[in-house]
Length: 277
View: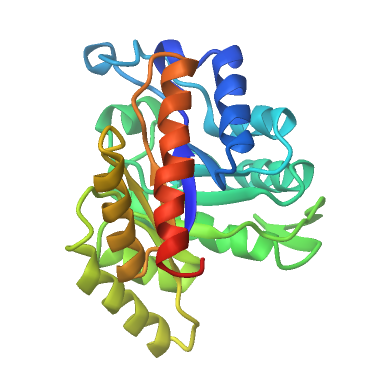
């Protein structure tokens, strides 16, 4: 199971210096992936914890690609209805190209009504927009030449398409993952409710003639209790989770370093000793 860590791209922790420090620390400790969130228009009455300051996730990953060498770079999640399909595909392809194929694309529908209003996009259409963007991404990475709005054009650079992980709750996210993605990306602190849902994902994939899809979980492990955190990670692995992303709360680089060390050592050691990764 791959182990990743969520970087804060909001509030006072979203400085270039701290982002660079945390990213390099995670890479040096041997963690597999860095992940960032997506908010685009926080209303003043809902800004507690961030002050309304959010960095763009794709621009942040481009910055982190230049600050690191090996570690994977992911969105958890990029809200597809917030952005036009073609510019999004170009961003994705560019980061994938310049990072040497390190991008992992977690995607979602978005949920905050205020953001949809600010964008002038109907929240009721978020599912349809997401599906259309996913279909566009599939076509964009399939051939150098494609068409949009009755116009042929070259989609270059065209690196290997990054894996696409569909965020959201069952059952809709499961069906969307089988149709458009490489895996499902739920968010939970309790692995047990996932057990039947992962079984259903496998059934749907088999029914569609696809290999088993990945399951990428965004969670918050109790790293202040390393043994308990390791045991919880083992349960996630046992039920079929293939990538586990810990979302720590931290104020500075030292606090992040402590979390990353526990994740990279105690949790990784438990997973390694339990069975081959």
